[in-house]
Length: 459
Image (cartoon, rainbow, N blue to C red):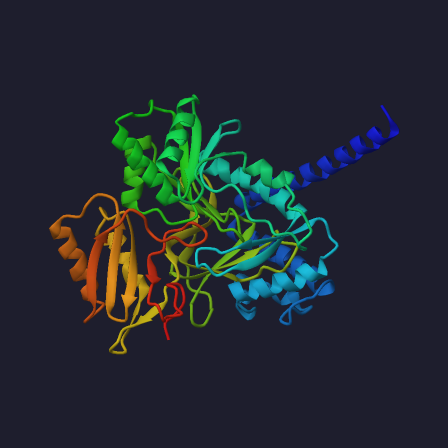
């Protein structure tokens, strides 16, 4: 062996040892967090948060709100003394820290449009990726996955890494690859050819796990039911939805086609692997994250079980202080002793995106949350969006089986109760509008002279 080869091999082994150590550290944190009682977990998480904030204060372009008095954070309620980090704030923070880390090869910059279509940048360190990968393996086990079980995904495989400079090439990362060891089909908007390849891959395997966007999984289920070519029993070991809400009717369709009930993996580009659903139906929050449900107006914490704006503090992010970050979702959190054997904070009453207000010509304002009622009261309406064509003209576009005249009348009556005086029509469509992330949009403003886009308030 030449001296150069020996040096390269030694460097590779050293790097792999560091990766494996970080990977194991992430798995250990999950185990420690899930074994801890409520009070013990609170102290474990707050201690890590204090250490993280102290590190950011002593090095780098610390934000104005950061100060050395982190010891004041002694309980979850003390988090209300810290400001809320918005998407715009995260974008600005990432830009500031990206310049500071310009020569660091272990920090990578990413960009995403997210479900709102509002671009945002964020940073991830190599250590954070590897620790997160170890923890995500534990979440996968919670979802029913077993080591060695192949995973097939109706999902887009890349994360749009931007790098810090225009001339900096995108890099692949061991930690990222270790978790996402899946075979991908179709991206955000799969075609029938993608579904055929996806189902053919399932047929070639004795057992597998499948996951993806809820709307894509449901579409594929409908395609499978239409082919009259059922899968052999037990072929799908487990399945989970990620990236968008999957309503009960969609889950029923999926179960009819694939023979298993899809579970939920609550996640985002900025905060991967937030919570996973166990066999008992609880959405267990990863101990990596400190999650709050707060009043959208005051940002004060709400009582356990009360629905509010979801805020997330990432205890792994050592690239920038991602603290009290508003994902834009509504939900509630409760401490539960679950039938699966775990005791943890769980997400309950997850209600999807935070609503905005739309103004009608008469000056009355209504929340876009009224459109969420469609999924609850009309379970046979699976995929839909409400498009605003003019100030007083709304169009419900839906995809799937044709609605009966009675169902259409029921839908019109439901919406006219809130959208008083507006024209409302119902149209069956072949495709529905999606955000850059691939998620379906429940409301979109198509008025030519409007700056609103369905996820921003009307003025």
